[in-house]
Length: 66
Image (cartoon, rainbow, N blue to C red; front, side, top):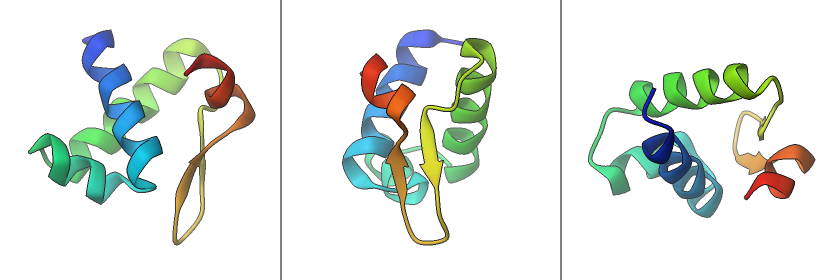
């Protein structure tokens, strides 16, 4: 996993509040953003994002790392 790209995706998700909007800004598929965020959280062993049905926000751990 390209960690710089993953961090850029994390910032976009945090700024836009969603995977779809972040993917649009980055010009990639939403599924790529979702999979990369899952892989980043898995590699760090911590949840960086709080997901709801309407919005994605940074978790406390995500806030500390950004």
